[in-house]
Image 1 (cartoon, rainbow, N blue to C red):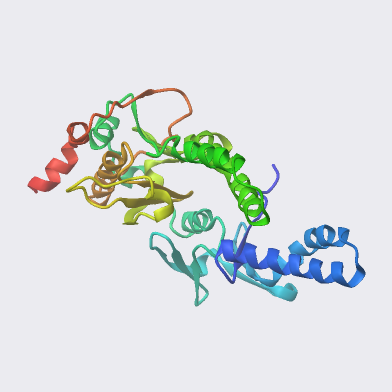
Image 2: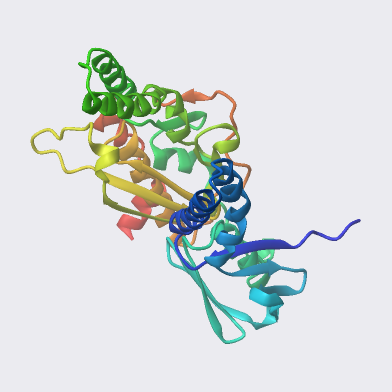
Length: 338
């Protein structure tokens, strides 16, 4: 049997989006300079593509390679430092970041390290092995998980973005308005900008399923297909919330007495899953996840089986607050009485 191929993770000096923008900007600027110098427009596209990878290395800090016997820190100019698993310690997961100590050096994993959740999970698996089956706490039964979520054992709780086809309708209105704009250089510019933005608005409804968040007794999922993310409940780390960004919540008008919309962020071993509390099913899903994490903190083990599949299970019908309060978990009741 072939040995497992080492895994490599890149650490950038900037957040991932900023590192990509800086690399592309530098490559594009180099292409513009050469295009002007040699008066060859084709050089802009060629140089930008060829220089993108070297420019990306400029904002790269180092690489972390996972081997069979430890991790290897790969720096520039071939510098290598190997740290055995036994010298890794002080593992700490802090929601949107994690840290561990490698031979005295504290290594921070956050948005500057793509797929850092996977890296930290592998380190944790080697440094803190799972306990023997006899020492593991019993998993929360499926019926209890269903009660925490307020659904039946064979149902799926779905949280969908509340705007549905709003962006598509707005895009169609702008497209029609652009068609009747008067002539003139300024109006031509406005027309071009509107027409460039319209396709994204018109396709907004098509990408809506990729923002759906679904939960059942097995786990949590976001989206579908290759772009989706599926994790068992045991892989859920933490949950927090913040004020909903305007770009996600602009469509929603709060009713009198209704609290401001919040964006709920669930951190898992495979990445982050987020949704809005005011979206249909959002408040019920958040309450269910918090109950499950409270049960785990009380010493219960969450289900670690296969995450929920793409198979069409019957979805929970939501009818407001009455459904959100339906079927409270016996675990939560026992904790409140204790």
